[in-house]
Amino acid sequence: SATAACAWSSSSARRRRSADRPMSSMRMPALIVWVVTTMLSAGIARATCADGNCSMCATPGECIGAAGCADRSPGDYDAARCEPCSSDCSDGDDALMSDLDLGSCGESMAIGAGTGLFGCILPLVLSCCWRRRRQAKWMLSASASEVQRATAAVKKSWVDAGTDADGAGAPTYHLQIEFLAKHSDGSAYAVAGETSVLAETYKKADELKQLEVLYPMNHERDFRAIGDLEKEASRLSIGENTQICFFMCCCGMALVICIVAVSGTGCYLGFGPFVLMLLVGALVGYFVVYPCARRTKRATAPISVTPCAAPLAVKVGS
Image (tube, rainbow, N blue to C red):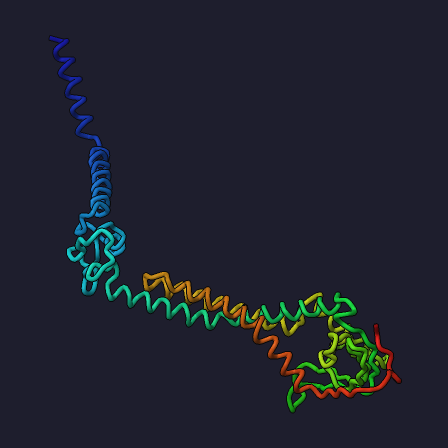
């Protein structure tokens, strides 16, 4: 009949549309099922490894981190050699780390110490600059019982054109001065010697033929020009800025090398010695290098100190 013919035609059309459907759309559900199954299998494997089924641990990190498992691989990691051990895995043959792991940590710590030794120059220089600036601020703000002020007479002034035999380099400004210093017990001392000053201080002292200086009580050999102290307390010199920039580059290179090399060993204990060396550099600069440099300069400076009965030529600041 016509109705049966119409139904047969409609059914044939549906079969043809199904046959014409792309294969990719038919395979998509199967692909989704495969991905979900794989992820669940990996999660189950990791959970099984964490639960103590040591042979299921896929990496040495999983083996060492799993409770009750220890890596017994003689060389490269072998999941079959990830074996059960006692609860803490810390005694005798149940050590968490193999000899290879201990060697890697030793190498990592050696790398950290070596790169830290190279990078510690920056905190050493920074601590020296910081203590020098702190010393300048203290001398400018200290009371008369701690720091004395004096007006020195300029006897001679000259400029060294350079730092080497050819006269290359920045010029150095020198003054030969004399002033009278007094101690806490009331005694007076005539001080005569040479000192190096900044260009601005030199120009002013050369014009006025006198120089304002400060010195710690009873330590007149440590006198400093007030103009130089004011500059040091407010900013770093060009030479100090250049040194800091250079050593910042060195420290940055050391840090990058440390990160790359330590990460390559798989043991991150090497960052400890690196940080420790930076701290040691800062402490050595503040408590050792700067004081030693001051003592050396004081011992080698051409300065003479002579006791005198009373101030005669130079006015002593109170």
